[in-house]
Length: 78
Image (cartoon, rainbow, N blue to C red):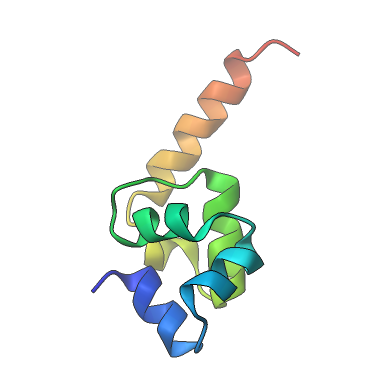
């Protein structure tokens, strides 16, 4: 079972309730839980904050994602 789903169920959140709390559709959250979609860094942080857990526990590639995001932001014209 996916860690996000396990943590969500441990907090007794339904898929619909949790999706509402992190401001995404239940369908998209279900895809994230089944590892068929990858959340943005901002959504990943909302998920972890709501579940009261560390992003490094939920997303093993967290460091790489932060570096990639920083690189993209640096290359984006302001």
